Image 1 (tube, rainbow, N blue to C red):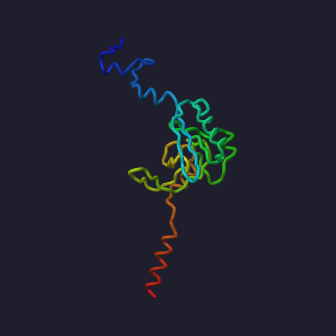
Image 2: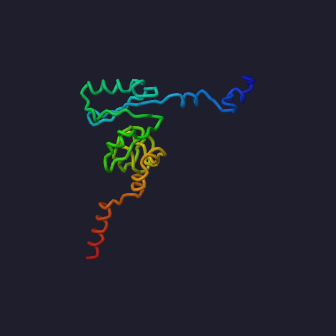
Image 3: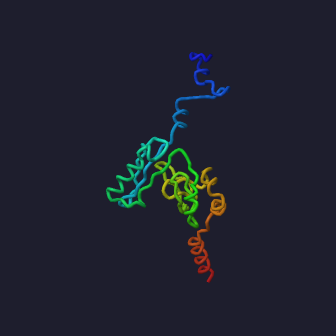
Length: 176
């Protein structure tokens, strides 16, 4: 019998013969997924976050995205993104694979990951390959899991020839 007055036993309960820690926040995080809708309008990025449910349709994110499209925003500027759970590509999505694109397990689409920094309010996260919509990095476990070949190729840092060419040409001018 669990003594609910004991603080340790209060957060533990019997599941399948073993003690499993439970906490209201842990139960909330594992119970359902959350979704967000990202859209681009007049060269600005907008975000609406409060869609909770196991599927985007059940959470209302799809209906909100459709209302944005009905308002006149182009379909390719409206994106429904998973906030907590990563999804593997379906067999029909694997058939639609685009060369040079990687599977984004949170956007649920093939994306061309761009080499960019992530700018937050008070800090800048260094440059690496990121999804242009949800900004997830190629260092995320699920991105690596679903894109093993492309990620190995992208992990090598790109060479920025523009800066290199300028420094070489200015040094060669000084020698003359």
